Length: 187
Image (tube, rainbow, N blue to C red; front, side, top):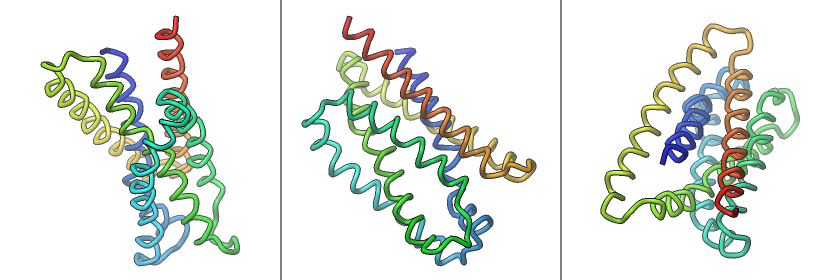
């Protein structure tokens, strides 16, 4: 159970560092208008939708643990690449839409699978309380990390870049921890 709480903390921390600030990133760093930023950011929601649809299909084909591991490991480059975008690139809006969609699919494809694994690790009579604790830890952690990210963006020279780096690093740590858990369960 401690692993699940730590794993949840890491994922929520990484999410809180970037998700609340995507729109301001697009407005402040990419110099987008509010409506263009909102349009691009909507690809996050589309990615959520696609992730929920394809998650069972992919996990059935390659397994839950591989799906989670590959998605976590593949998501971090898409988080880091945002550092290198600038508004003068040709077709940048199209590229950003594709990256927002891909990043969102990779990060969110794991959610239903993680929930199944987490719930199967607890007796049925304790699942509701356990799930509430996991969600509570996640929400509190997102609140804390988004506050930290806001300060990093406002008061450091690295601004958004540092939050993307921190988030990607934590996603890698989370993937490594999940691989370790899978190896421990296999032995």
